[in-house]
Length: 360
Image (cartoon, rainbow, N blue to C red; front, side, top):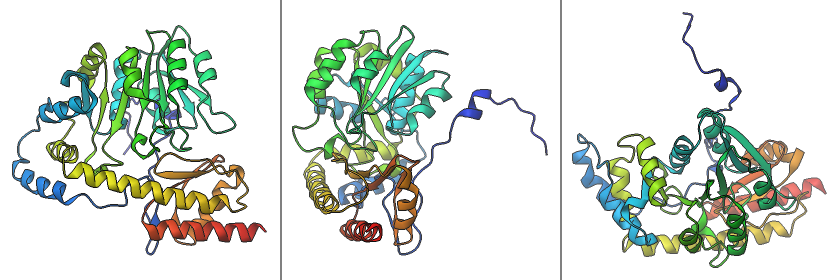
């Protein structure tokens, strides 16, 4: 059968998003930054109760969830926009702000979905390389702004490098950006950062009406399979985001799980899990820093570590796979490894040691 349907020509040059590879038998998957913990018992119980109502549409306004999130972030419920994961929220931002040919700036390398979301919606992607220290080059990003710029994505902690923006850096950057340009701060991993390291985005939000904060329930809250993310936006943008969102995008199960996660005792249990991830990250980073891996380890503030191995990235990915660890490679830039189960983290250390010995 020959298909003669018309498909947008722009799609031919847009790469498909590549998820982390599944793990073969006797291997650990540490390629997708998933939580190593099973969903909390309170969440599982609540979801079981919700199953009886799956013949009904979810609350499209997500009233209870938005009320809880508004209280969490000190804003009005109408300023909370929810959708099917942070990626969907980012896509809503592009649709709400960028017309055909308008520009969206983002650091690179950063979240792989940025160029896909921008170009698939007809906007022009403007990637700005990271600094030599694998940090966001705010100076270069600010200089890239033109009269066609509508949106800037900033990821902090940055995925995949794990570097963060400080409060002075963020504020100084926002002061340089025209208030007609929206700055989206992607904080998918912010809870994993050591306290006091990340920028005070809540304070910045109070002072800059062109700042929008994007969060997810896929990481800390451990419900990636339910797909739920949200934005904290100023009123005009929040209203625009709701207009372009997919109707009923936040499922009833996702809303139920998120509401449970935001209240006690789940909040305290999740906080303990975050502390465990930080300790394991510190253990892994300390072990890797003592090895000769052929690169300078990037201090990470996410639930992952990053090895900027350059041209040897693919070689290390295969080396790890042969030893039971599925890591995420990024072309000839480097590889990202999720902080996962303790045994998986220990296997990473052992693999890195074997890599060191092989190089020697």
